[in-house]
Length: 290
Image (cartoon, rainbow, N blue to C red; front, top):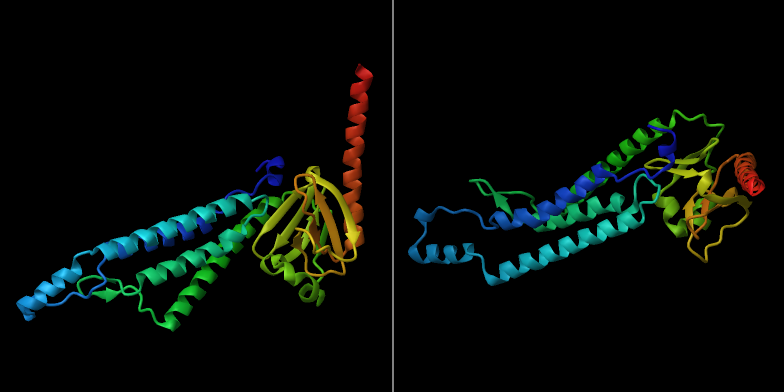
C-alpha cells in the first residue's frame, strides 16, 4: 500500500457489515417461508380437525400485517444503521454502529425465529429459552469482537512499514473511571498505545486503529483537565496525562493520554511547526515571483 493512502480513510468494515446483513435477511425471510405450526399426521385427524388445521396454515390478514410491519421496522433500522455508520466512519477502522449492530440484528432475528420449525420432523430453529437467548448473544458478541480484532491486526501490519520515532503506551489509572468513563468513548474504544512518525499519529486500540495525519491537525497541547461541556472525542485512559488535539476538519477536540506526554507533545509540535514554516516559505517564494 502506498504511504499516502495509509493516512486516508480505513474503509468500510465489510466483515462486520456481512454479519448485520446476514441476520437482517434471516429476520425478514425465514419466518415468512417456514411454518410456525408443527406438522401433524393428517390421517389420524378427523374431518373437522383437518379443516381447522388448514385454516390455521393459511396466512391470515393479521399474519400478513404483522410480517409487513416487522419487515418495515427491520429495513428502517438497517437504513438508520447505514446512515449512522457512514456519518461516523471518519478514520477509525471500526465504527460504533458496526460494533453493536450485529448483536442488535441477531437478537431481532432470534425473536423472529422463535417457534419457527423446519424439516419433516418440524424441528424448531431456536427454542426460545432464556439460556439459549443469552448464549446466542454471547456468541454474537464474541464473533463481532473477533472480526474487529482481526481487522485491527490487518491494519496495524500495513503501518509497520513506517518508521515510528515515538511509541508511547497509554497511561492507565483510576481517573479513567472517575473522570472519563462518563463520555462512554474510552469504554468502547480503550487505547493501547500511541505512535508518531514524520507523517502523523496512529492510535492503536484493542479493536481499532485511528490514523491522524499532521496535515489535518491544527494544534497539539498538554492539558490538565478535559472539558466535558462540549462534544469531544476521547481515546484516553487517564485524565492526568491528557493531550488535546485540535483537528482542522472537526470542531470537536480529540483527547489522548500517552504515558510519555511531554516527549510526545514536543515531537508532534516540531512536525507541526515545520509544516507551518514550510508553508510560509512556499507563500513567500510565490510572492517573490510576482
